[in-house]
Image (cartoon, one colour):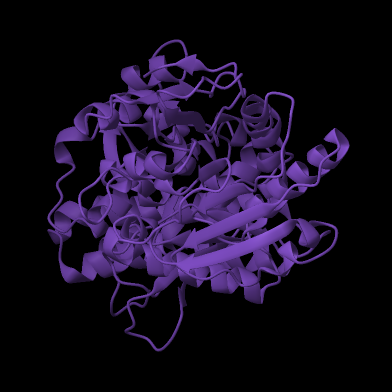
Length: 484
C-alpha cells in the first residue's frame, strides 16, 4: 500500500503501520524462525481487520476491493500454463511464508503439514473473483520445512484445465502424482480388490484375462500399485495373471512405462489410454469391448474433482456442538489479531484444525481463527455479497458433492454405464456420502444394482468407499454394509 492509495482509516490500527512490513522482513531474514512468526501473523491479521473495518466507510468502492484482494492474496501467486489472459490457471503458496498457514505452525509446531489447514485462497495477481481450493502439498526437499501448496480453481468451467496445469507443475518438479497412492492402493487391495477376486475365482483361478478400468487415472500411480499387488498375489497362488488395463483421464498420463517394467510388464498384455473426460467417454458409442474375463472398474478420487465449495456463516453454538466443544465457540477469542497480540493468551488460543465436520451440505472446515479471512474471500468472490446480517457467526468453507459428477454428458448415469460393462465398481471419494449415492441410484431407477458401503470396514476418516455390482451376481465376500 502507498500513502496515495491507502485509505486513512487503515492507519488507525497499529497492525497496519510499517511494523507489518518490518515483521514480515524480519521473519524472512531469520530463515523463517517460528519464534518470530507470532508478531508477523499478528500484524497481518491486524491489517486484515483494518480492511474489514473500512468496508462501511468506503461503501465497497473499487479501492477497498483492491485493498482486500491484496491482503487476502498476500504471499500467494498465480500459476499459469501460458501467456497472461489464458483461462488455465491455478494458485500456489508456501507453508513457511503464508501468514494464514503459519497459524497452524504456531498452534501445533510438530503437526505434519496438511493442505486443509488452508483450504481456500486467492492468488495475489489473479482475478478478484477467482477462488482456489486445497489439493496437494509438494515438499521441496527432504530436510527443509518448506512445502509448496497448490490449488486448482473453484470455477467448474475451468477446473479440469486447472488440474491439468497442476499435473504439469508436479511433473516439472519431479513429483510423480499422488504421494499417498501406495497407501491407498494397499488399503483398497487388502479390503476390497483381493476379497473380490477371491469371490470371482472361488479358489480356482483360470487363464482368462483380468481386466481393470481406472476412471481418472491421473499419474497412474494408484493402478500401478494395485496391479503390482495383484501380480504378487496371483504368483503366490500359483498362476500367472493376464492383465488388460484401461486408463481414462482428461489428460494422457505423463508415462505408462511402469506397466512395462519387469516383472509386471510380462503380465500386462493389453494397455489402453483414453484421453477424455470420463463423463464424455461414458457417453461415447464405443467405450469398452466385450468382456473376456472378470472386469473391475476403479473410480478413486475422481468424482470429488467436481465438488462444490462455498463459504457460509455458522452460528457459534451450532458449530460448537459439531466439534463437540462445551459451550459456544468464542469467535472474538480465536481471532489472531486478538490472541496473538502482546500480553494476550498467545497461540494456544488459536482454533486451527485439519479435520472436517459433517454438516447438512457436506463437510465444513472448522477453522475458527480464519473466519475473517474466509469472510474476505466471500466478499471478493461474490460481488455484492452482504455479510452484515451474520456478523455474530463464523465464516467457514463448506465442501459438498456435486450430483452432476455422476451424470454422463448424454444424461445417463455414470454408475449405470459402468455396471453395464463391468462386474464390479470400486469407488473411493471424499464427498460422495451414502445418501448422495442412494439418491443417485433412486433418481436413475438403478434397481438392478447392489451397493456396499465400505467406509467403516476400511476405517476411513476423510473418505468414503463403496463397492457396486449387478444385482444378479453373487455378493463378494466383503465386510461392508449393504445400502442398496
